[in-house]
Image 1 (cartoon, rainbow over the protein chains, first blue to last red):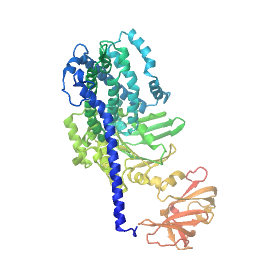
Image 2 (image 1 turned 90 degrees about the horizontal axis):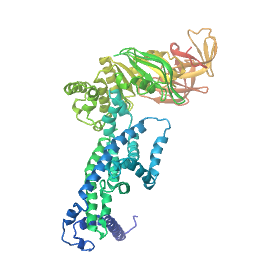
Image 3 (image 1 turned 90 degrees about the vertical axis):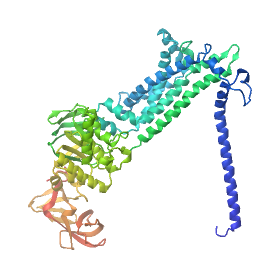
Image 4 (image 1 turned 180 degrees about the vertical axis):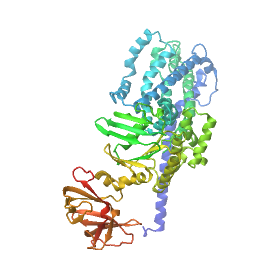
Length: 288
Length: 351
């Protein structure tokens, strides 16, 4: 390279610079397009929730915001308050049972040998390959016989049947990676196995447990199919209540937007809140 | 404090026999080291004493009481793990206090005991830290402090120094020895490091393939190995083992002939003569009974290890640190005949 003149070097540098500029402009454009595709529907729903019914289909960016849609949605026709309560009960109920049960089961599967070995774990996973449509009929018949149709309890039970196997697998993967030394130390220190699980294994496995909790929360909160079939008036959840905005007089898009926003906001808030704990968990586990 | 007795203890993992019907007594207050290569069953034996592994057969007695099927927490033993087994989400103080906490000791009492123990192992300024903010040596001290805080009947230590660098290992070794002496608690220590075993132990148990090869004081193990395995395993560099035969009290092998004192007239085929490198001196050619060309010399600082070729064998001697010889120079090795060992070539047992 020693024979290259300073002039030709400068040209090369300019060309390289132009290339880099072009690449970075393209990258930014691509990011903007993707971001737009992700955010535009959310923004559209958020805007629609505050539009008067006559403005719903217009593409005007400027409009006079109104809270009337919320008043209507929470009113007797749509009972959004009741639906929100149902969704909250079903989701929290599901998580309160699912996470402790899955944690205990994951620990057992991770640490003990069973007659039949891996068959239990694979069987657990295999149940999840059966499509929901296939099991809804027997579930419907069983819950009807038990007089549990249209109750939050029935939705909690059905959610658990779907989520526990997934949560067990997620938490088990995390526990498999934890060294046995810690819980063995706790047991020689005088703890029972349960106490070692509570004092040592669970806190250290917390990032995995939190991950499973977020996953279960999202699935339970958004669950539509089972709730649609198994609820009628009393136990209707938020996703199903979206259907109520399709009326004989046409689709009430502004009400759907209000319901959509009600579904999204808690998820956003909770993921923000949990994210912080999630990171804290990750750091505290980082030893050895 | 208590004695530990293993009676015909056996552990099988499926078809694999990890510990094969062994019996052993550890005296009250004794520092016993289990020594052997990886997979010899030493850790499994210790875990059976701790209650972390249930024996397939046999029984474990602590202080004369049968604890074979007791849970670890019911045995009053404390264990230091190879990877320390610290609780990463707790501070050093909480780690040390945990055994007291699960036993329901009141907080004020707990704090006082933690401070006392922390001072003993020089952890006092680090009590508020998490294990992740400690060095390897400090973590090891936390594990030790957690073990001694409640004065258990028996200490179990599973290769506690193997994750430390060489210098720290020497320091910690001395500390463990001092601590055990001060507390007088029966200690069982597992290691594959013979230097650790020889320096720490009151008695050593040498194990191989699930079988106890020899139990004895470090002197007994070193000076009178019971069989070829112990002879080859203990000592660095390893003992020279030469196959040959005994003819009229003289050991003969291709390229060498050694009259052995105290074996006058003895005749036996298929024997193995063992002599440690430190029991041979390097002499000029013709001065001694084993001679050959130098195969290699290794300077270790305090000595020069001289390896010579005798027939197809290689023999190593620990020579003076000022010895300078070139490869293929002819030298002779002069063994101290009071410290040679004879083993049966077929069974490997000491003769």
